[in-house]
Amino acid sequence: MEEWRDEFVRKDAELVVIGCGKPSHIKEFKEVTGYSGKILTDPSREAFKILGLTSSLGGLLGSKMFARAISALKQGIKPGSVQGNALQLGGAIIINTDESIEYTYRSSEAADDPPVSEMLAAVG
Image 1 (cartoon, rainbow, N blue to C red):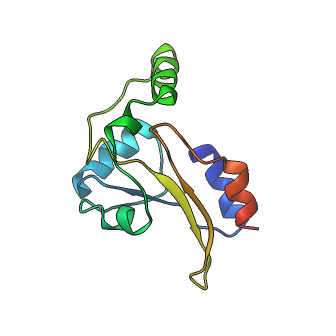
Image 2: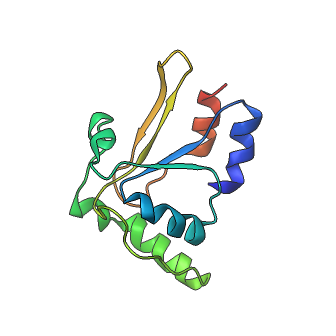
Image 3: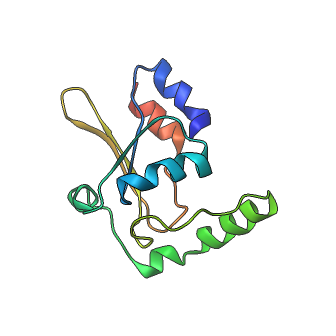
């Protein structure tokens, strides 16, 4: 995510991560991921519900998750502690300055990330 942040900035777009953990979890998230951009959190998960992002055990146990976990471990990357609801799936929403939604991606399982090229194309 961090490596793409400059691309969004060049397109005059602000990249914001929204998690579902407690505000006190933000520091550890930044340390584990190296992400230095804006991070918000919504422990109630209301934003996730409004955006239609799902939460499920099946999503957590998807095939992409296992493949990505094995790859990360081989690279020496170890997971941090669970923060928020581990079953909450993510996604990406691009909202224009006029509040219109330009792009929506809802993850079907953990480690199902939106194509960054699609997101960059949506911001212009």
